[in-house]
Image 1: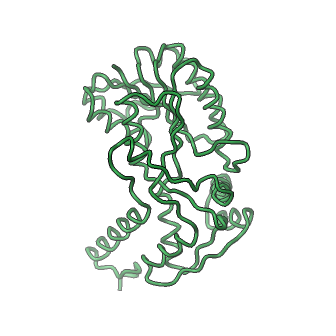
Image 2: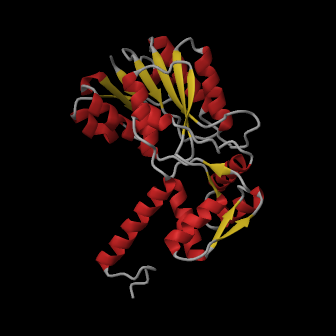
Image 3: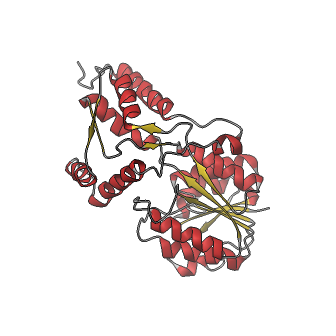
Length: 303
């Protein structure tokens, strides 16, 4: 059996690849990337590395020949990745891949305002129409991406949000990778869309309480509209498209599209998913330890 992973030099793909390599003979693993040099270490361990760029049709010809199970990691080109991902699915079907696993997003339906929905919904449709056995892993929002915002809220005493009373079941990238590796190595789950989430759905009030815990102060929740949140993120230095994307996820949470916590991680891996609170506490402990080692004051002033 040969397993392939696309985007294997990216964070999710690389983490998944490491887990698959622990479970299989490296000679059974194919890793694709736009820059093979980034995977030189894994190639040295015996994995086959192929240069594949979804936007370059020439690299898709024969890209997945000999592959039994394939993980297609969605690319980061939001709004411009649908056609390339469709091309990758078609290439997998043409190569005779037996089972394609794809990383998507919870509830990619027209009513969901998250800006990533169209890309994921279209790729899922392409999979269903490909004639290849498929599994969709609908990964929730990453826990680690919430840490800077919580640290800012802890420092300022204000958590600015557009999520209203909605909640999100934040998940770690490591848990998403473990779930993907379990499906690739263990097989099964064909024709299923699985919501990969953390253990709890957290509201803005929950996040404020967590920020208050790490900051040692009360944190106020400040509710704003989508446009105001995006404008605030832009003024803080985020590129416009990133600010709009973050605001759209907040709208998705507010409207109930991210609030379902599942047991998928535990079911697939045999261990519970990591909670956002544990991620934040670990990062906070690391920052505190680094500050103590450098002689800096807890607020970074160096006093």
